Image 1: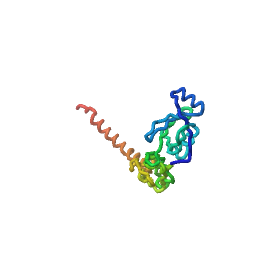
Image 2 (image 1 turned 135 degrees about the vertical axis):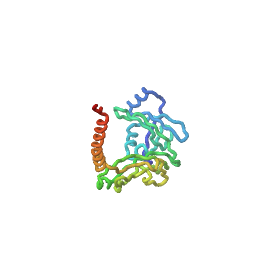
Image 3 (image 1 turned 90 degrees about the horizontal axis):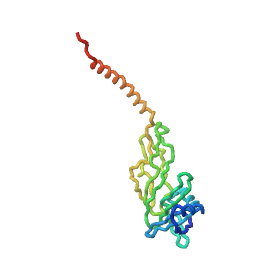
Image 4 (image 1 turned 45 degrees about the vertical axis):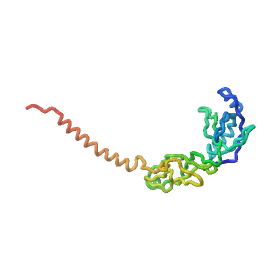
Length: 223
């Protein structure tokens, strides 16, 4: 999804831990932009501006303008990012130049709404199995997310990737039969009680069989 956002960037010449540490003290982070047949360019950008994009509704699927000092402004997409494992600070990002006339592959979040009837009426258990799918489309057609209504799901029913409504240039790349959400029997319900009952009936037979075997194995008394 393209947004009216412009991020300023400065070419970066130095490399290494010391250079990166100095950049972060200046409230900047190292970055790289690549793609569309051009050389990759090392840059510095503001982590605050990038965090706003990553934490927005469209997240890393946001297409925004990158304005490189002394260069041109190009539409880009964040393809990789790294946070500090303890401090949680953004450390580095990679950006891909986007040709707005060519299709690209992206992963889109899938949200569910509604209360499944199989839970309310049959005591089933609702499970979200997959939370995103991969599609291919033109950059302007990238959706923020997909939403599936699970209200009509009864016990044993599911919604699959093929049930996601696509529009425009969107093409589903995820396997169509991949389950997104389903309603299954809750453990501890009638099925579990039936299993327990069957198990309790089987126990005396096992014990009886063991007693007969013991009698057969016992040494016979001589006359």
